[in-house]
Image (cartoon, rainbow, N blue to C red):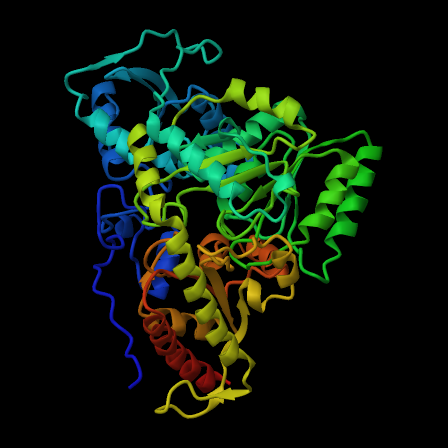
Length: 568
């Protein structure tokens, strides 16, 4: 008997079960809901009980922001407040809010107010703003990732009424009161050791992996890792940053706001000529007396799963003496070994490393064999201050105890779903189940390393199998439909949790490109031109039984096929 797709019982606006104050997911089904999220529909947000905490202060962080506002005479609905432990947040928030990239949401000079307070020994740098200017302010919290975490906020809330005072300060942004950063505990050191050990586990060439524990730097989010990395590298060379391939939208917007901006090459597939194009661009730039701060790539890319030619790109970075930063979040430590090509390795620990969608974190690893290491190691060490709350480090440590066994299941499940979808896409006509007629498939393409013409590039950095673990291709895939109507039909009929995030214990689906790029037609067209189109549904496969996942996919495909057939 065929497995029947199981319905999702989670209520709208709640997180993946089990729900906690620190959950980072929101179950928000419905194709129309995507547009309400995109347009920041406040009536929608009023119904949400759980939210990705980097989207805005949420849960305990929201409670703390309100409590701080009350202490400082700036309360909703007239004012909002965001709080940081990093004094650099004032300059960051000012630059973000007043940037020309904010367009109609640009905040007038002098609108923001800055206060420094102390709660139970923790110094907080608070930015107060009129709620009417939220669209021009909140991106600073979202894209830098350096806001206070929910666990840190929960702890400070216990003391807000008994151990709070405003720090005496004259308002000079160039002379801020010194920070009181988070103390490091055993869990921080244990997480760094775990990352080091994972990088040394089954390397392609042991001679290329020489990471020490103190080469690993931990941050409160993956975006905070990128924000801090960008700051350090920009101090070394204030040239452009170059982004390659499909890039997570927060990273894209963060780096386009840096002083000299960024250059983006979206197409990185086998026919893109990316290595030659990069060489030509850099040759012209350096002949003109301009430099590049660093090159950044996600491997594979999110959400179109292209695996660029890392070794070819590495030759170009060596030619022009440019640091090469590789974000391995999608491939993940367990599956790929990129230290032979990367000067710096960046990862979001919020994703499959943690795996349970209830804590955030990020890491930067410096490669000791990089020619830049003698300069970068003291620069990172000098700039680094611990902002990863002890409770978050402890949760990252406990969650990642089963990282390898979970990765085995994630790899297996994602490859099975991708294979099934690819089979459906390559059949001219297909009957999804015995009760449906054979109709033309609504699927245009399945985006996953094993179905991609760039698979050889992935395999070139895939770790060898060991008795305890067989590497795979990660938890993330996307399915691209031939029409937007078919994509919508699949999404609405696909019985899994809906919303942002990846690498969790349960499957999540989201039309990522539609959510992030569809509001501005020019932006949407730009990203669609290299393959990140609105007809794609991104699927982060979880730990459910494979048969249940295939049944869920079939349920979505039946509806998508019907809708596509009626339109064709």
